[in-house]
Image 1 (tube, rainbow, N blue to C red):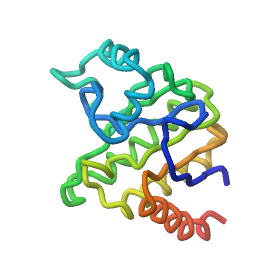
Image 2 (cartoon, rainbow, N blue to C red):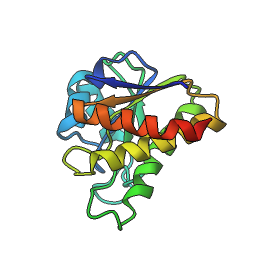
Image 3 (cartoon, rainbow, N blue to C red):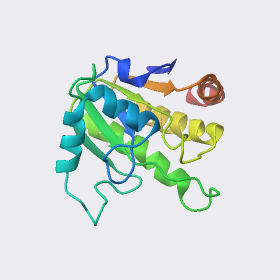
Image 4 (spheres, rainbow, N blue to C red):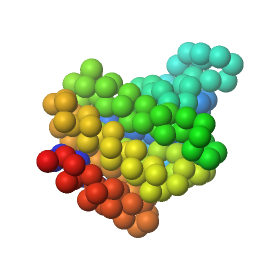
Length: 179
């Protein structure tokens, strides 16, 4: 298994691509989005601003992904994934979140990138419950790993101990099903 769980600052990881838990404008925000923008430098905001809007104020709809260079980050690329805001789980939140992982992995494969790190998409201000988000992250990355060779290394990055434990629990539950 090439799926790792790591607790810490995603902006410090030397991987081919880090995924940003972005908002639809792609013009920066709080949490991991703000941290990635600060670490990458002002060129990241400039690159995001150059991405075309699909409708006024929206460069990346919920559930989709856009790519930019990593600029001052150790990662060569940043994939901006817009996760869903948690309402109650009946407004396509799991499918939209799963699509963030799947589309990021697909784009990494297309670009022949061998390592990718994901934050806990939608778990900050968007309010997605940690265990439910961890279940989606683990199920999507394990499903991808079964049928694809690239990326070879997938890192699920926890911003705190609670998220780290949620990832570990979901991996432990899923592993017997993988065999």
